[in-house]
Amino acid sequence: NAGVTQTPKFRVLKTGQSMTLLCAQDMNHEYMYWYRQDPGMGLRLIHYSVGEGTTAKGEVPDGYNVSRLKKQNFLLGLESAAPSQTSVYFCASSPDRDREFFGPGTRLTVL
Amino acid sequence: RKEVEQDPGPFNVPEGATVAFNCTYSNSASQSFFWYRQDCRKEPKLLMSVYSSGNEDGRFTAQLNRASQYISLLIRDSKLSDSATYLCVVRLGQNFVFGPGTRLSVLP
Image (tube, rainbow over all chains, first blue to last red; front, side):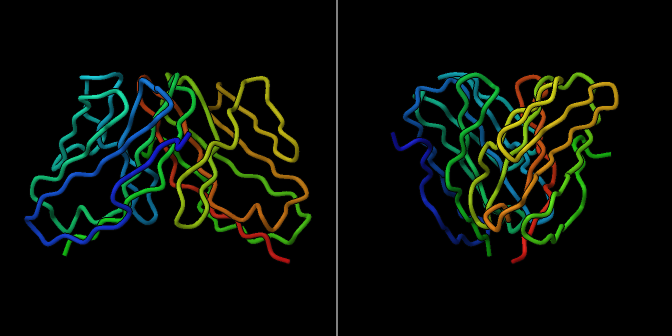
């Protein structure tokens, strides 16, 4: 099993550009999460999904959108990137809400 | 007040030392408790769940005090490979809430 994979690993955007981050898991997990991690701060939840076709807002959803059209994929979109969205983005999946399995992260810089 | 707070660190200890990390959480409705480990520029990985009765995994012991809303992690006989950031995590409803982490450096 590949576990949780994230694409791309690195990206540099200019202010105002858009992009989509892809998270894929092959463990048949129901729950999926998108976090951002900034220096000196814990991981903060952006959006999450409790199953295919469902999404919900987390702690810091503004400026992001998500979709979960297939159980194995959870997409995070930035419609108009801002420098404040420079961060490391982690995707995670969970089979039972008691354990999370993380992807390797995407390092995004917005200039 | 942050929902999950941890010792600010960093902790620099010699090999073989015993080190303890503390964590407090603010929401008494928190349901599950965990310690994760995160190596530099890597993803967090589950170290252990934490139960009210306390639990041990080799050199690692975790304790939970629900009345005080306090979680601890004890590492005995620390190894160089234990150097990492330790994240305290609680589950509240559908979501996991992460503390800011405490960095540990084990020195030769």
